[in-house]
Amino acid sequence: MSCFTFLKVTMIIFNLLIFLCGAVLLGVGIWVSVDSPSFLKIFGSVSATAMQFVNVGYFLIAAGCVLLVLGFLGCYGAQKESKCILLMFFSILLVIFIAEIAAAVVALVYTSLAENLLNALVVPVIKKDYGRQSDVTQVWNSTMEGLHCCGFNNYTDFTDSPFYNEHQAFPSFCCANDTTPCTENMASQDNVKGCFRQLLNDIHTNAAVVGGVAAGFAALELAAMTVSMYLYCKLDKA
Image 1 (cartoon, rainbow, N blue to C red):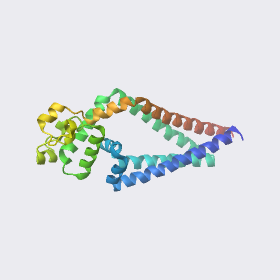
Image 2 (cartoon, rainbow, N blue to C red):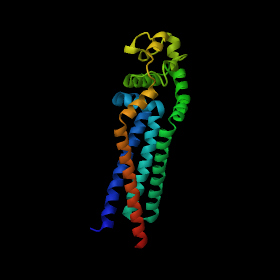
Image 3 (cartoon, rainbow, N blue to C red):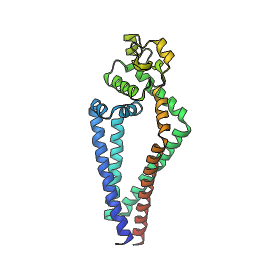
Image 4 (cartoon, one colour):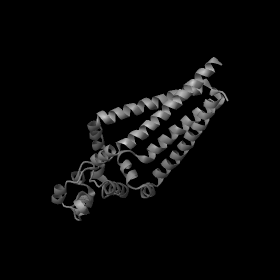
């Protein structure tokens, strides 16, 4: 078997797996959008944490669609030996790769900017819906229980929320040992860390794992781009 044939078959199999992963993500995304409480029950605090910062359902649907398109283009382009489709596959993957690098740089260099942007989006939702909307309340309760944190910044995020206005107290997670009722004085003394900072601490603690996963994805993307460009150039000489 020639090198060209081997790489062609490898690319077809690899992109078929990508296509199947995209289909799974798309299905899960639709499930989350339709029935998020059951998703939270199965995946617990990890999914609850993610749902504070992105709409997991829409994110999974978008990711699934991208993987479906990439898998199809890569598989079809290699099978049909189409230069146009292989170049399209390479271009899309290159854009995604550059976007990931840019996002990583922004996350590392402009953490405070990201925190300010998220703070402007998340805190108003807490003040408006915590204690009134069951989904928002459940997600935040799962997050605070799983990460042992309170609010986005701290207990003050819940001031004037429907929950505070009704109970004249903060969620029990905002006090040490989940004290009920959690008064302002107790919450101030215990000073439970906000969920954003706690999440950053957890990421830093598991930096090796996070970095390894990111490096693995980057290596796969680079390999896929290299193979697609190799096939493209070989077809150009054919």
